[in-house]
Amino acid sequence: GQNIDQPTEMTATEGAIVQINCTYQTSGFNGLFWYQQHAGEAPTFLSYNVLDGLEEKGRFSSFLSRSKGYSYLLLKELQMKDSASYLCAVTDSNYQLIWGAGTKLIIKP
Amino acid sequence: IAGITQAPTSQILAAGRRMTLRCTQDMRHNAMYWYRQDLGLGLRLIHYSNTAGTTGKGEVPDGYSVSRANTDDFPLTLASAVPSQTSVYFCASSETATDTQYFGPGTRLTVL
Image (cartoon, rainbow over all chains, first blue to last red; front, side, top):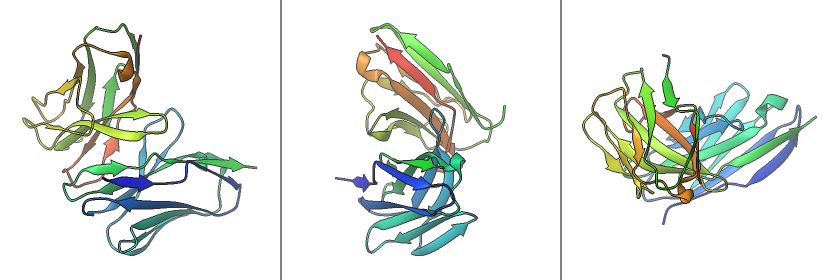
């Protein structure tokens, strides 16, 4: 079966750095997405990785290792507004998006 | 309209009733999707459409139907609602089936 694993919940301190991991087992791989979802709102696109390596976008970076079936989202200089759920999703061989259950990130002052 | 809109925002429905959730996008995206999101389960694909006039079944299609008569609209119909269909429903669209998906604001549906 297809599976995406993420930690259920993480806590971090304002101003710090946090790394949210995602491991996947899917039938084929055509890219990995990270989305942010604030409580009661829709998911919004953060990043896309299709090749191995690090993609940096401001305070957020996303890393991919296809051989290990592994990605992480790195958030730097955490702000209170970063409190949200972070969703990892993988495009499989049929170009269907398979979604993880999401990681709820709690930022404390 | 800018992006994707969904209606209604929320709805309480008696079991056995028929309900249509509306989704409209103005980005001229070819592909559209319906997901449900339940606590702890993540987003699950109900139905999708890669282009106007075609539809496909996702992971959890039973009890739901869709149509794609034109590019902009992708309604989701519950023929006879059951309490297990209580969920938050998100519509999404992408330029093509392989591109980034953009989500509507969601519909919170409660079936009693």
